[in-house]
Image (cartoon, rainbow, N blue to C red):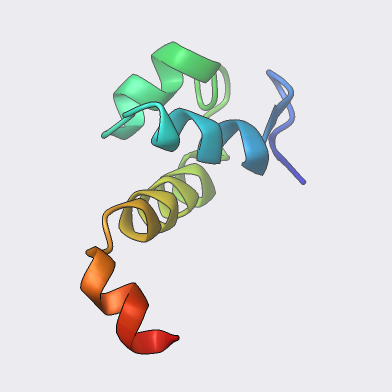
Length: 67
């Protein structure tokens, strides 16, 4: 799904940035261009970045307990 229409940034682009170590919205903007123009996507981009970061940072033992 497109998150930032102005710069053609998708939810997948945001997840990939998080996997590559992106930690903040300003860094996400620098890496992908999301939010650099009109800014209407920043709330959704921030939420997706946080979700991707949280999923990436789950400790292994939590994942084992869920299985």
